[in-house]
Length: 82
Picture 1: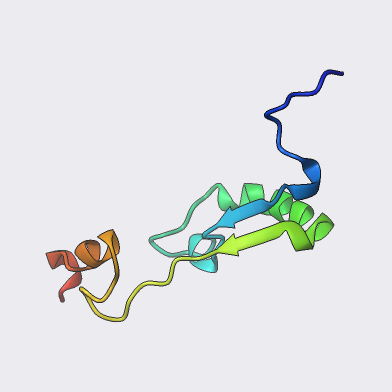
Picture 2: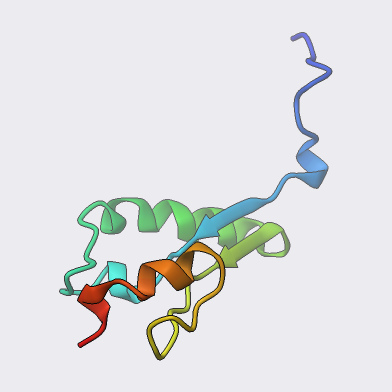
């Protein structure tokens, strides 16, 4: 087997899991049908290497216009100003 100078090191590799939240698994307008298919793989990987697992999640603002960056503009849209 040949090695690649550009290949990441297994010792420093991480598993980044973005927005793995219940809202995407439950019966909501945000439900992602494929989530239940990939969840066993996520559990397997993170159980085997918990120190290398990084989870992120999006936390919305309480009021329109209170976000930062592009999210501030997104939440300022008329559809969110009830």
